[in-house]
Image 1 (cartoon, rainbow, N blue to C red):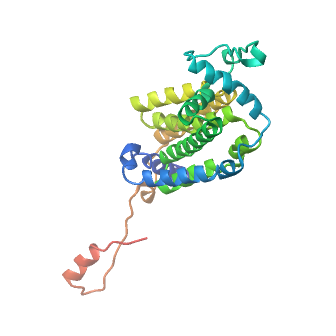
Image 2 (cartoon, one colour):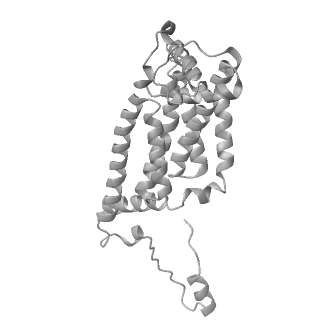
Length: 279
């Protein structure tokens, strides 16, 4: 019975801790925490700023497709299905099969900066900051701003995430990993209390995930389903767990007895009844 009571208490506290709606709290502490995450996200890219883009295993392929993709966009083909300049002018149907999300971002930064190095660096900075902000947004639905800040910082500095840039050049996967935390955050918020904003946010971020990297979209879909199932089980346990026989202290009540010496005055008795015991 005590174990059931303890479980009930934990579930009650866990669910009640999610009662604050994120936008209201955002006005208080979140901009400063997001600024710290953004600084860390930029600092994580300092070696690229100083020494250049690492020549990872997949970098040449990304640049080989980015160039004709950008040229197609400049020519007015906003959904290039055939890269005419690839393969020595023979063409390439890559984007009839491969998600083009990262290349749209790269083409946009190229148009803004005017050079491929600055465009690639700008895209990396955007994705690094967005990934940290996504982890913060997810963790913020579960806890305080400082805890969520550490979640964002650790996500930015996660070894595998840095490996995607510095060693393997898995640039599309890096972009998709920047979106993935937002999908988990919106699933969490929808399970807690469905709102139109959160449903639209989940739809938008999930669509971006699919349009950026299909393998991660498949893995992320399975993970999202498992995550939603766990949240559902927690809610069911909270609702179904019996509470009628829980001890009073586990229901938020504490009863004590104060015994004064014989002859105590009325004022002393009333004062003792007003005492607050601090644990």
